[in-house]
Image (cartoon, rainbow, N blue to C red; front, side, top):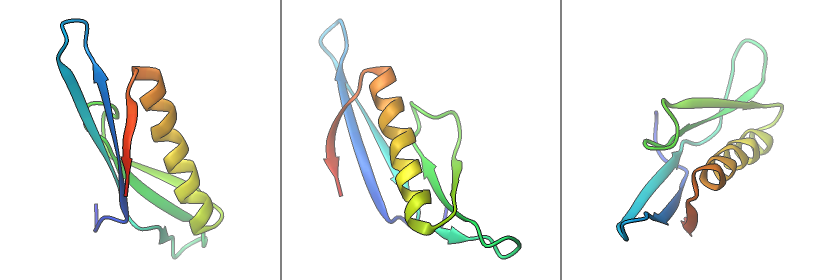
Length: 85
């Protein structure tokens, strides 16, 4: 993944009282040369099994869809967002 545009962090308290934190890293949007679509690559070890390219018609849509994916995965796995930078 080339560069970092922003990150989202999440945290959850486990049953034994320990705290687990995860960090989602978002690369800047990239335009595909063949078809003009845009993607935003996101990595979030502990939540996503691998880096994902999230596609949109515009750069803004690709970023919004990538954020939405991570937010829904945080919710699914019980992580509360703690920082958006």
